[in-house]
Amino acid sequence: MAHSKPHGAHYFHRILQLFWSRESRFVIALIATGLVFSGLWYIDVLRSMLVPVGAALATLFGAIPGFMTVSTKGKIVSAVLASALVGVGTWYTTFDLEHEKKGLETRLNLLSAALSDYANGLNQEQRAALVLKLAKISRQRFNERQFDHVEDLAKLMLQQIPNNGHGLYFYGEVWRVRKNREDMRGEFNRYRSIESSLPPAERDGEAEICYQRPSGFCGERTAWIDHMMANDYYQTAVRSKDAGAKAAALGSSCNFVRESVDRLNRLPAEHFPRGFDASTSFYSTQDMEGRLQRELATLAGGEPCAVPARPTAPSGPGG
Image (tube, rainbow, N blue to C red):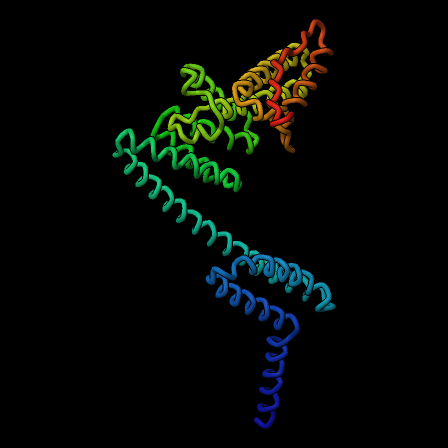
């Protein structure tokens, strides 16, 4: 009995060493960090900061076991625990975000259905006014690169007025920027098919006139669509290895350029005097003309692409 107290103190010292070793302190720090992050995650304003901070800490915790202990067993245990905690944290945040996403999608679908039901009860004049408002919002959202919003608005416009030019145009533009060439061509061809059946008074005019027409057709918009189609078929031709397919794509591109310029020629001469300008994703009207002439010249029996000339803009006073 005289040795029981020192023996008990020895075991207490062993237990203290076991639970307060460097490895144990590291695990406790991991758990504490995880709990802190779990609590802070529910503060919305901090989430954007927690993601990069969490990634940095994960990298740090992953490296710590390498220099924290000299024993192989200690390194393995610490590394496994660190990886497990980081993995659980990643799963938790992903699960939470996915849950929130599904909740937001459900709310969005309910709101969209409610708006559609409300719009279905409108008369023809009220529907036309709604489509014009949605078209202007779509233009703004497209310029802000909110393409998911534009897609939803295009669907709603087509629900209210089927084969509406605004809906078809913005749908096609969304597919274009997403590089979905097949669906882009489908929407633009539907637009062009309907537009070709309209009288000139319902399809000519500048872009702003489009936003005064619930039907959504105007000359400048159609010229732009033709220009996008011309660029698309030109890219098809350049990538084609088959001479016949290349010639067909160049012919289609030439036809679209010709129609685009012809529509621009119906606008005032000071509008687009050189055609459409280039961007990082497509060629200008003038560049397209030159490229088509060069490509067609390399084909056996290839005819030049005859494009109408743009009229000269009127001179100013005293010019």
